[in-house]
Image (cartoon, rainbow, N blue to C red; front, side):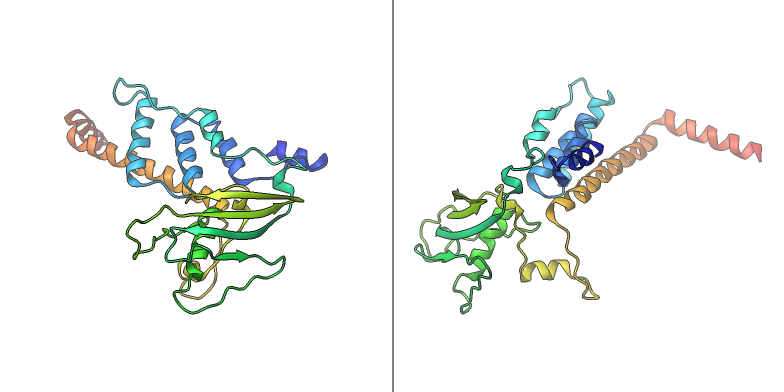
Length: 265
């Protein structure tokens, strides 16, 4: 953190990046923490119960508490590979990004193969009747930009041979025009700089008092990691409680402790 602040004072050679800060912290922790952070930044989701169990086993092995097998260690390179380095001044992360076209869409709902969106430099409005494909285009953009809740891309149910979702995205990065061939990936840099907000997101992110709560995807990584650590803690507490109930020596120890406390009264 101090290094990033120092860089900004010397001319802005570094830009604070939430994922970068999280990974820098993780690479100073035990390997199970690096594994947790690596999985989280790769998926932009909280870990599952199955992943938590694997991480807990890794934690126990790493601490020499279970089994002779060596723990699965996520190296610093593995964790950092999921996150781009701090953007430097003049790099593509500091250059303006603008979408140009979304074309050659296939395998997405029933969108026509030749359909194309030309994005305006200002405001682009898609309008049409229900079932004309507006939601399909939105889902493509949501998967490319790695929003928190990217819906599954559904194929054309009338097609005898469903295709993998794909599209061509053209955009300007600074003064350079680039083309990306998308094949259902989630989170494509630098298009992850986009924020996509639509009605399904409203339903998920508005509480009973109708106060809108928006958390950028990268900031949500911190809560996902925190939640994962709590899951490991809960597994540890549960395992300790089970050992206390099944181990007669531990149970006897607690009984002796209880009798000592009562005698002191």
